[in-house]
Length: 169
Image (cartoon, rainbow, N blue to C red):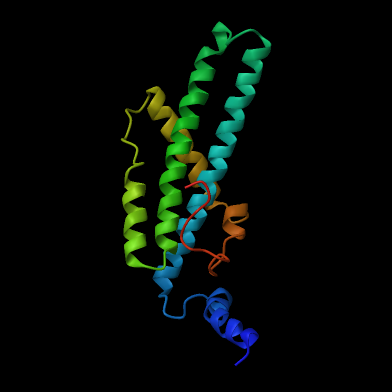
């Protein structure tokens, strides 16, 4: 057997898995894995948007010599929203990693990490409560939109080279 043939045989299981997914994966498991990946995608998008919004406010504040009195509430809301979005993004990225893991031990470890980012429910009408409601509306709207990028770009096949670890996790 040549080196090329040996390399091809070693790569065959990975190629087969990439082409058709895990043939032993149940439809329910596949559906859960895809949902977790889509959830993580939407959470990442909301986090990027929150960071950009806060950065824009930072730019305005720097140009004006600080946060204007009339903008303090807006700035504080944007900062709390960004923090909330980053927290939810981390949690959902770990859930995605858990659902894509190849071993039960890795899956368990990722789910334990995801649990560390659980956000306590906030009182409705408070700053934290309003931020949580807005984030949830944005998240639910994106997930319900069949044309949204995260719902169209993530399919049933495993991601190339996926070892269960998401970028930025």
